[in-house]
Amino acid sequence: MIRLRKDVPLRAAGIAASLADSEPPDSETVHDFSHNLRKSSIVEDRCKPHTNPQDHPIIGACPMRRPQFDRLAPMYATLERITYGSLLQRCRIEWLPTVSHARSALLVGDGDGRFLAELLRSNPEICVDSIDVSQGMLSLARKRIDAIRGAPDRVRFHQQDLREWNPDRADYDLIVTHFLLDCFPESELAWVMAKLDACTRPDAVWLSSDFAIPPGGWHRPLAQLTMGAMYLAFRAVTNLPASRWVDPTPTFVALGWGPPRVQSWLGGFLRAERWTRCDGTASLPNAAADSPVDHF
Ligand SMILES: C[S@@+](CC[C@H](N)C(=O)[O-])C[C@H]1O[C@@H](n2cnc3c(N)ncnc32)[C@H](O)[C@@H]1O
Image (cartoon, rainbow, N blue to C red; front, side, top):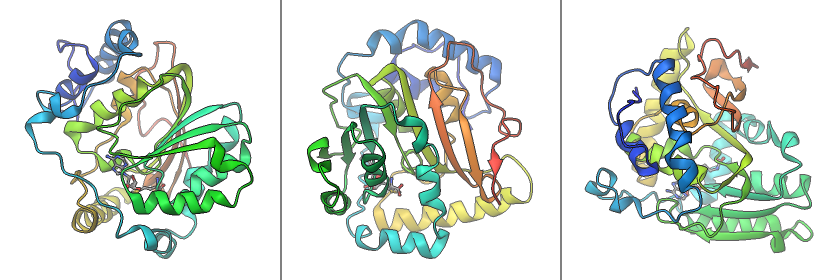
């Protein structure tokens, strides 16, 4: 669990340091942190280039573990269908109808391009930067959108690790991180999210789907077990840097996003979230009280 301290240096890279402690957050602390953060560092730093996380005193101390999804790429969609049917794709496109106004999107770790294809079909004016560290995944995404008229001209693919990518713009009005944030360990997650936050316009929307551990109920132990098995498998097959799930919610709030719109499935194990920047009044959503609609 994560505690946001009031006394840490309020800089984008400093968020990682502030999140390194391991006690549960209380919403007052999160709110204070969020408020200070917006007032000072992140907003002022929005357009400044970000340094490599390896230069960060905490993150840089550890060798960077590189994810390798190339071997998994050709069978990724099939495995997904066998395990979750069409549920993950439902998560990805859940909030798509609400972003028809977007004109410049940043998709990170989009994988084989199933969300990208739907986005391009539903929004003929949007231009997209799609970053993925896996060449195999990007090739599948390229092939998939070739079939959509005019789409290849609207997409720039970047084969790059997000942690090393240097954005050349800071005006995206849509960020999408479906099933990506859970790939990062706790020591990197806040840093990575701050980097993405810094690329967006003040009125941007952030869509993010992920697995989650529900706060209570009989789904919780089942989710913990399933998640544990998934991390073991993904670390073995893809060299995933993360070894356990870290809730990104406190970091969204600390960065000034929220409250989210949430749809959930499987008792909260699967969540599709839509975040917008708040006016400074958001506090940490109570997982039990934010009443996502659960479909199962
Ligand atoms: C679990 S898959 C999710 C794929 C897709 N977004 C989905 O909804 O199924 C994670 C994807 O993120 C990419 N990825 C993981 N870590 C990354 C990183 N540090 N930088 C860029 N891409 C990364 C992987 O190559 C893979 O395509």
